[in-house]
Structure formats: C-alpha cells, structure tokens
Image 1: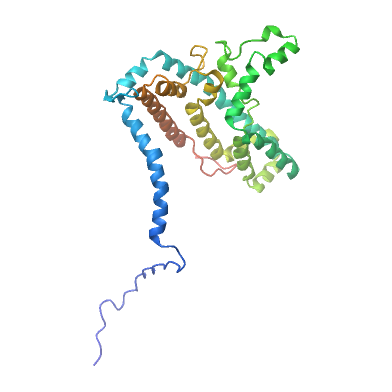
Image 2: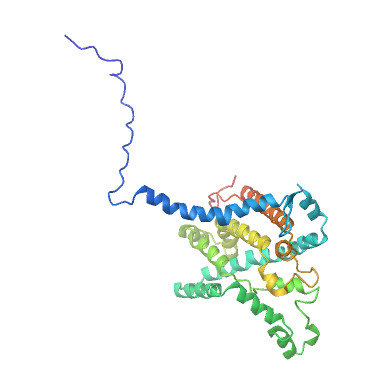
Amino acid sequence: MSSIPSADAGRPAGPKSAPRRRRPAAAPPLALIYALLLLPVAFLAVFNYVPAASALYHAFTSWDVGEASTWIGLGNFRTMLADDVFRKSLRNLAKLGSFVLVVNMTVPFLVAEMIFHLRQERWRYLSRVAVVMPMVVPGVVTFMLWRYIYSDAGVLTELLRALDLRGWIHGWLSHPKTALWAVAFVGFPFAHGFNVLIYYAGLTNIPTDVLEAAEVDGLGKAGRILRIHIPLILQQVKLLFIVTVIAIVNGFEGIYILTDDGGPGYETMVPGLYMYQNGFTYQKMGYACAIGLAMLLFLLIFTIVVNRLMRTEKYHPGAPRA
C-alpha cells in the first residue's frame, strides 16, 4: 500500500531556529553579574538622576535654603526675563563665547596641520607630547597662575614696566573695560591639547591615496587644506564645536577663580556663575534651578540643530555633493 504524501512534503524546509548559546561552565552566575551591575546603577540614580529630577521640579518653585518649597509655575522664568543681571550675563557670555569659540576651533586646527606636515615621525611625536603635557596641570592651577600674571605685581605688569610702557598698565581684572577680555585671553596661545589631538586624529585618518591624488593634481597646501582636509574632518569639527559650546555655556570656574564674584560690578558675570551665586550665596535654590534648566534647554536645542545642519556623511573629493 503506497503512502499518501503529506501536504507539506513539497514545501522547502523553513529556517531552523538558532540553538541557544550555552554559557561557559566557568562563567560567574548571572545573579552575581546583576548584583555587580546594580551598584553602579544605584550610584547613578542617587547622585545623577535624582538630583537632576529634583532640580527640574524645583525650577518651578520658590525655594530658599532652609524653607519649604512653594510651587510658582513659570514665576522664576518671568523673573529671569526681567533680571538685569541675568541679561548682562547673557551679553557677557555672547562676547566671551564668540571669542573663545573662534580661537578654540581655529588655533588647534592650525597646530594640528603644522604637526601633520612635519616630515619625520619623531618630530610629530615630540610635538604631540609638547602639546599634551600642559593637560596634566589642573585647571585650578592654571587659573591661579593667570590671576598672578594679571596682578599689580604680576608678570604682565612687570614686563610693561621693563619695556617703559607704563601707560599700558591697567588693573586687568579690576577695570571694567579690560576684565572680560583678560578672562578671554586666559590660555593664550590657545593650542589646547585635546582639540589638537582630535584634529590630528582626523587628519591621519584621511586615506593616503586621496592625499597623493591631490598632490598629483597640483593642489597646493592651501588647496589641500580647504578642499581635502576640512571636508574630510567634518566629524571632528562638529564634535569639537558642540563640546566647546557646552563648555562655554556651563563653565564659570575660571571666572570665579579670577574675579571671585564676576566683577568688577557684573562685567564678567556669566549665567553659570550667576546660577552658582543664587544657589549657594543668595540661597535662592529655586531660581538657581530655573537658570540651570534654561541653560540645559538651550544646549539641548543647540545640539539637535547642529546635528541636523552639519551632515558628516562620507565625502569623496571631486564628487558632487547632494
């Protein structure tokens, strides 16, 4: 008696499910792994997420240290819009930030280009070491040194006296017309090691055949930089652009060390320092949280816009761009 073929006999066999991977016998128990992961997660929650959530809530409250918080909705933000000191801090931030952003984006790039064009690897290595060495000095020490340089008996004042340029001597950090620019020039000559290394890493990742083709086509050094180097390191440019703006908006430690209180008057006041003063000097924690939230929203919108506008897809020299 012949057997009747089943309806599924002619169908191709479906994909077999992948066998479950067995854990090695010597692997630690999963319970131990989850327990070890729980500790850093708990630390993150307690010291990062909970304070952030608390600041978000208290930005909409009137909360003085030692007193109960009261919900006031957008009251802090209305006060912020009418606050002359806060508006002054925004103008200072725009001036200071524009200068710092330009020099931090351009000078390290030029330094990275000079290192990249050195012929011997030994000199390139020594140049990178020389640029990175200042990074081991704590930032507080750097600002204290610059505070001494700007002091009445500091290096800058004594140099001007030695050159018989006494008319140029000012109270660099105490005069309203020079205080903000004195803060801006801290870090001269602005060859920041982190930025230089990021640019240099992007330059070294450019394919050799592209550089050789540009040289064969007769592109000079300026042409190679403008038409080859910059388009091919846009990822690094975007990264440093975002990181630098975040540091400018959030940073106030240097101004605090150099001027103590954003003086003279409010000539060096910036939003980060004003937030700190409201929270820990004036004890207005609710208002300080509102300033911090405004800074966070600005940086969030800025980052999203930059990521949308600065496309860093693969770029091929000589090919038309969409």
